[in-house]
Each structure stands twice: as C-alpha cells, then as structure tokens.
Length: 486
Image (cartoon, rainbow, N blue to C red; front, side, top):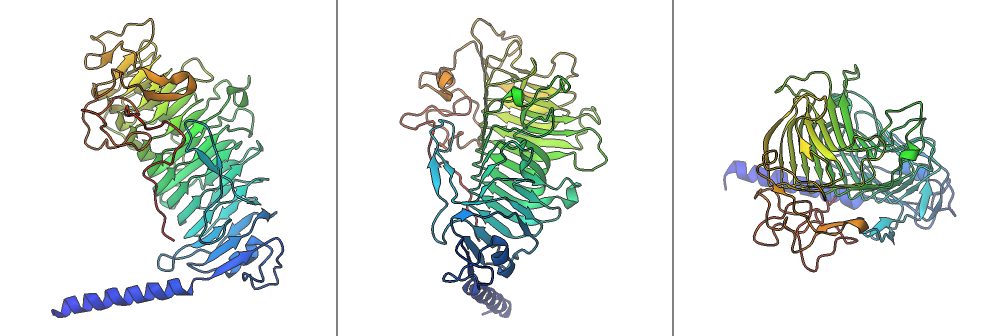
C-alpha cells in the first residue's frame, strides 16, 4: 500500500474513533416539576429548572424537560461544538417525538406542534444549540432572540404565542452582514399573535421550512405585522403557511402607510449596513391576507445593471391570494430595483407582480387570476420601468376582462384555470384545466407546492400545483423535509 494512502486511512479511522467516543460520552440531564436544583439532574433525581440542567450540559448532551409550566426564560451562553455536536434542549422524552394536534386547514401540514412543556423563551447567545418542542408564551421579549455572531442553531416543533403583547416570534440581531447569525434552521414551528413572525438577519445558510405563521398582532400603533422581514444572504423560505392577518390590527389614522407583507425587505440607505437581501429563495409557500406577498425595495440607486443590495431572488411554486388587505394598490410581489429575479410556477390571485425601477427578471409558468388590467409588468403607474428577460407561458384570466395578445404575446389568455375550489382555498387545478401540461419545461422544476413530482402528464402544469388524481391538496405530510443530525 502507498504510504500516503495508509496515512489517510489511519487519520479517517482515528477521527471515527474520536467521534464514537464523544457520542458514547453524551449525557442526558433531566428536568421535572417534582425535581430540585440541588439534585444531579439524573432520571431518578431531576432538576427543577431548565436553566440548572443546561449549566451542566456539554457538546452532544441532551436536556430533557418533563411536562409542566416553567416560569423561566433561559439565557443560553454556552454551546456545543462542530466536533462534539449541539447541546439539545427538548420538551419530550429521548427517542420519542414532539406531540402534535390535528389542523384541518386545507393549506396546512395537517397538524401543529402541541408541546406539553410551557416556558417563556430563549435568549440565544452561543452556537451549536438545538431547541425543540416548547410552548413559548408569557413573553417579555422574542420567543427566540438570537445574538450576533452565532451559528448552527436549530429551533424545531415549537409553539410560540405572543398573546398580542408586541414581541417577535423570532428575532435575530440587527447588525451588519459579517456579524449576522448563520447556519440557522427554523422548522415546523407554529407562531401566532406576535407583532412580527420572523425578523431575519442572516449571514448565510438559514432555512425556514414547514412553519405556520398565523394572525400577527400587538406592538406599537401602526406596526406592519409582517409575517417575515428578510435581510442578509443565502436564505430559504420553503413550505411555510402565512395567514390570518387583519388590517384592523395594523391600520391607524395616524399611520396611513401601515401595510402587512409575507416577505418584506428594503434598502433605504441606512447606516446600519444590514439593508440587503441577496440569494433569497421563496419556494412552495402559501401567502394569504397580506398587502404585499413580497416587497423587495432598493431606493438607493435605480441604474439598470447595478444591483448591490437586492439580487438573485428565486420565487417558485407559491400561492399568493386573499390580498391586498389595506391600501387599494397591492401586490403579489413588488420588485423595486431588484436584480436577477426568477418568478416561476406561482399561483397569484387578486393582485399584481411588478418589476420596477430597474428590476430585471424572468416571469413564466404563473397563473394570474383577478389581476386587473396588468397582472404582471414592468411599467405601472408612476414607477420607472424594469426589464423582463423572458415572459411566457403564464395563464391570465379575469371574468369580464379580455387580455390582449399584443400586450401578452406568449401567454395563455382568457381561459379559466379551473381551480378545484378557490372559495374553499383549494388552489389546485382540475384535470381539464387549460394550465395542464401547458408550462414551459424547466429542468429544475421537479416538484409542486405539495412536493408532488413534476410532470404528472405529458408536460409540466402552469401554476403552483400539478393536476393529479388521488393526491389531496391538504393536510398531509410534506415532502422534502430536512433532516437535522445532532
């Protein structure tokens, strides 16, 4: 054997032995309402508080919390490590799973987390932590508050109820890009009655998946109550359900510009250095009850071809409906000086998509219903024009209106898409829809909003859904779940 190969094998074996040893030393610490913080936090002699057990945990260890209400907000200042693994704090037994409750909403996953452990949230000031299955309420600050400069944080299967007191479900430090958190996973959480759902400031590799954000409330007069605000780079929102907002919780006579968005970001030349959003993926989400589904605005420069702060947006397989709420002019998506936008296979009802003030993008395979005179375009009202590199294979329909082939020469015009039941929020298309098998072929478009493979027929369907037989719209386990290794 070659000496170099032998050395490589030796190193690999040594690393494997080291990792096995670390795993073998992992300890589970126990917390219960019957415990005492003078106990060793063992299964037979548990601690009383989460904080006490956490102070004993090291990389790879687990803090298991038994059912009950713990009147504490846990300040996390110690973390795990890349080699030893995350410190896990969980509200269910090791080897089990977080309890769930049934959710009959047709656009939901079919269930929500139903934790049996209630507490008041986490201030996260260290890296390599996993926080699982807590009901977080009685808040005086964000459900999860992430400090600057941290990484490798998982927040999964939590139920956050802000009770309208004006806190965020998730708050991340408002800092310049190099100091933002990174490698963050926010998965399968239910967030309700917080003033904003998720305030995202991410350096890179942040995933928000399979969450439900419902009815944002509270905060100061005129709070926008956005489901999410998005700043940073390399951020993915996938298969989230955003719904239930009311303009009554937002609009005030003294704040006429108050509006509610599913995804909002901007650059208005703030000295903070955080106003950017680049390499953003918005995929397989359902966005209801908003003024803008997406608003991405850069007002610092309008020169075509110079996209320093907002660039490379991929928006695919989403449903935007039940808007606008609030002002008379609303948007499924508004791109203001945002570069390299890809907007494909979305279902859009009731509002428009604009590429304005130098934005550029590709717009294809989308269904637009009830989008007024211009369901999508680059010239709207007093806004300066953007540029569409391609616009084709979109289906445009509004009862009583005739769209012209001179305005939309490469689209499917004036044909009812035959939604399964839009009044009941089933935005699938029927098998006889003119959208079926009519989309442009896109090699990267392999699944629809539910995770059903594309195509199901002779070609891909226009819109967020493939027409299928025997595949239900709602509640079902989603596809493309991300596995997290602890």
